[in-house]
Image 1 (cartoon, rainbow, N blue to C red):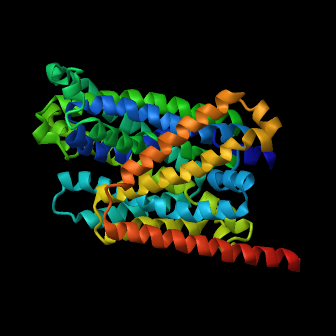
Image 2: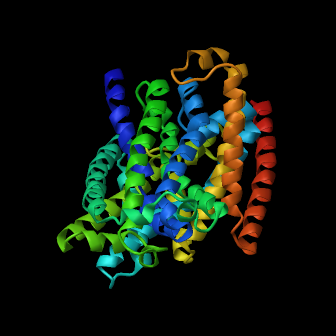
Image 3: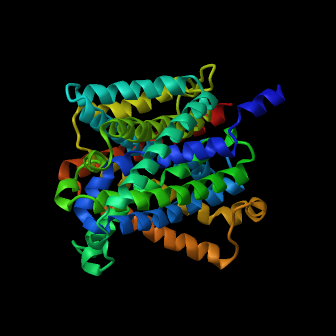
Length: 439
């Protein structure tokens, strides 16, 4: 029985597949054109900055995952290091960040209708969301195998995009001058980095499956850092091709199909759209649904939510929670929200969630000294706290940049939701205390 359970756990290659699939998704395929519109020929440099920012932001999760790995990682870390009320508030706040699920489905649909314009983009987005739900219902290990196959196709597509695109790049227009890299000024360039940090930051979420990973203390940080560095090379090269082949006015605020049509023959263009764009977005959507339920599931098992939310099917999937997060992605699609609005809202709030994890990480050496000292991935002494302080400033700055462009009604929705979950946390905590007293 023990051997059977061991075979079900994810190894390093499985984690790399999930990480790469999680990173290469809506960001590279949807946000590239938007960032070209903001930063122009500075886009490749913005990709490099985004990779550095993504690695910095994931450091607290990597430290914690190496020292005290667990499923539902974000919730578990905040609860164990900051208290159970903070943990429940975190998991409730985390729910609203997952409007980002809609960006994956909508981005995929935009590429699909570029080939089949007679289809409804909304209908396609809803269909692929349902397909991803079905894939995850069959279980984590099986979805990992499907994920790895799709990752292989999307990497081949990106390699072809780079290999055939680089010879057609007008290198003179990419000269690294201030006016060329930051045509809209430093603020616009930083905005581009902040947006692209979403494209480069998906690897951290592999920690949510900590209990399902072999040797998680070593495997998780290794997969996080390795996959992010690997993908950052692809990102920079894709950014060069995307911004250097055609005039900016033709590619600004557009997806990659404009450049793909220029560099590929027709049959290879279709392969790129399906094997690259669609599989990239599908792997991100599939990967997200594989881990996104874990924190709420952990809270349910502890009594913060009704136990029915924690129940799993034979494949180990918490079905009800999976459906809830699928609905979180479906509602923005059905209400027709713009991709940019969804992305900025989700990224800005996600950075606030990450900041809570960072605050928890500050307490790791004092609360779990032995685990911190024995961790495979660690920094000791004052350097640990200085590094976390720098990362915290980066998180808050990235959150501000993304949230500052939202409209008044969205600010109201966010404020009302935060007030609601604060009240809910107090009410549920009283319930938990009474339940303990009774037992």
